[in-house]
Length: 449
Image (cartoon, rainbow, N blue to C red; front, side, top):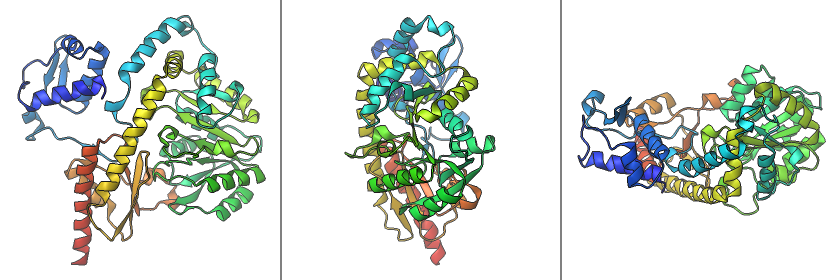
C-alpha cells in the first residue's frame, strides 16, 4: 500500500476512534510527512482526497479541520460506492514515485521548458516507448510514434483528419467510449455504428459496412471494451484486419487497458495487420496518473504527415515536463513494477465482483464479467426500470448510471448496466453489489405479485 493510502487510512481511523474531534486542528502536513517518512506533497494529496470525500476542510494559513457531521445532516460520514466511473482509484496511484521523476525531469529538461518543443514528442520518450511497446508485440520505428496530450487528443485528430482512402465516415462499435462519440459530434464527422455484444461482432455485417458505408476508419476497443468490458477473440481480430485490408479501411485501435492483460498470447490488433491499416493508441491514464495527459499513437507511414500537421496546430506540443517524467519513470523500471501491482489489484477486484455476483440467484439477469479490466456488465433478461434502479441505489450511496452516452441514438439498448470496479475497493464491491442485487431482486419480486 502507498504512503498516500496509509495517511488516508490513518486519518480515517483517528476520526473513527475519537482522537480527532470537530473544531480541533488536524495533524499538520509537516507532522504527517515526518511520521510517514514521505514528501509533503504526498500528504497534500491525501488531504485532497479527504476533502473530496467531505471529511475534512482547509482554512488558508491555518490548516485542516474535521467537517462537522451535524452540518451534513447525517449520523456519520458515508462512503460513496461508485460503479459508474471510468476513473482509476486515486488511493492506488503512484503519486510519490512519480513526483521524484517530475523533479528529475525539471533538472534534465529545464532549458526545453522555456521553449516550444517538437509537436511529434520528446525524442527521448519516443525512443523509450519504442522499446516499451515491444513487450506488447508492437514492433515499430521511432518515426511511427507520436506523443499526444492524452488519448482523447489522438482520437479527436484521427476522427476528424482526412485519410488517404478519400472516405469520410467513421464506424464505431455500439456501445463505445462516450468521449469518441462526443469528438465525432463536436467535429460534425459522419458516423455510423455496428452492434458489438457478448456474442462478438457480426463479421458479415462488418463486411457490408466496409464495402458500402464509405468508411474511412473503424474505431474499436478490442480488449476490455468501454463500457461492456468484452474482448475480441484472436480469430476475430485477424478477420477484422483482413476485411480492413480488403476494403481499404483504416483501424483506430484504442488499447487503453492493455497493461491489465493477464492472458498469454493475447496481442493487440496491430500485431495482426497485413499492411499499414492500423493506428494504435496507448493511454497511460488508467495505470499511472489521469492528470498526466500523455498518450502515444503508433501510425502507418501514410498518416504521419497529416496527423503531425493537425497535432501541431491543436496544441503546438504536449507538456515537456510530463513527457520527461514519463520517460524517466519507464526507464527506471518503476513503471513496470507499478504495472504489475495494478494488474494484480484489478484482477482481484474483478474476482471479487464475480464472487459477489453469485450471492443472489436472480433468474431475470445474466452477468458478464471478464477476468480483469475495469468493467463488468449485468444483462437484464426481463425489462427493468433503470431510472428507478439508479434512484434506489442512490439512496444506498451506490452510484450507477445508464448508458445513453455510450450509444448513437438509433442503437440505444437499456438491457445492460455497466459495473465499473475502477475506483472501488474489494470491500466496497462486495457490499455495493450485495445492496444492488437486493434492490434488483425486490423489483422483480414485485413484478410477480
